[in-house]
Amino acid sequence: MKSALLSALFGIPMLALPPACAAGPAAPTQASAPARLDFAFDYELARLVSQSVAQGQFSEAAIAAIRSHPASAAMVRKMKLKGMDELIAYLRTLPANPKMAPAAEAIHARLGGAAGDGYAPLADEVTRLLRQYVPADFAGRLTVYFIFGGNAGGFAFDDNRNDVYVNLARMSEASTQELAELVAHELFHGVQAQLMPPPPRPAADTPAAALGQVWTRRLLYDLLQEGTAELFTHPLADRPANGYSMRGKARIERNTKRMESIVTMVETIGLRLLASPPRDEDGYEAIYGLLFYGTFDEPAYDLGWVMASTIERHEGKAAVYALLKAEPKRFLLRYQELAQQDPKLPKFSEDFVRAVRAL
Image 1 (cartoon, rainbow, N blue to C red):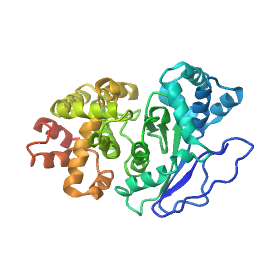
Image 2 (tube, helix red, strand yellow):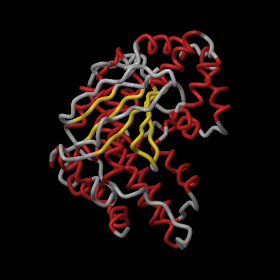
Image 3 (cartoon, rainbow, N blue to C red):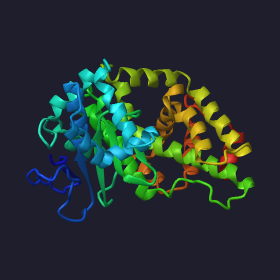
């Protein structure tokens, strides 16, 4: 089966796929270099897994195709598995999962043919969303790999944000609009990767006294990155809840009520990074998880949205794009300037703002 619908953004026409190839799934291809920004959809892994889960078993042919698909290696990495055998063992458990089996049936039915027929309007809606924040002269080529299963709704890796991943197992009840918002969120990470410097991380020769500044800058980088991408996914809070959005909407409502405490939490973590920094990426990720993982309601996404939407409201959508090209600390400092003018907005303490300015 041939992978995926090929779509384009900002006036580049959608390209038809060639006929299916007997050699097996192939990566999305383009006829020429991108004139501006274009993106491709690869549904192949989601189709292979959802069909197998819906059928209640994985054939040897399906297992072989799953092993060879590039998105499978990404799932291994994201799930922190030991290798492909462990991924296959996990996937074989999904047919017995009472939530996964009906989701697989819905997703497989919607995928239709090789181009993801049931998702035909998706590319146009993603284009509309991205067009609001990405100028027409931005050039790049990105690929969305749709997967089924795993431990995240969507993800990308810092060392390759040209490829992003969206988990359709969590989207069986989502509308085209809701799926497009998540896809746009992940694709915006690909845009960010071309504009923002690499994520701050210490070098082998970074002195211990400098580690705190490195990891605190990383926290501000992550807050900017996720806060601006959340502009695409946060709108579900403004619509009536449905089977898909109920959980996210409830999370946003809880975090909105405790936004002052979330600001304090970010300050406390930032000051901890300065005073007692972790030695390596794993140590930082454990702290990052307090703000960006589900155990504590992913509070930094909603704080980041408050910050990004405040700047957008005052300065327009172009200001969001401009933020990506500035030092990440500018995101917090500019928000603080605007928050000082509005008694309803949460504010960072002056002590923390001074620490940020000094980075």
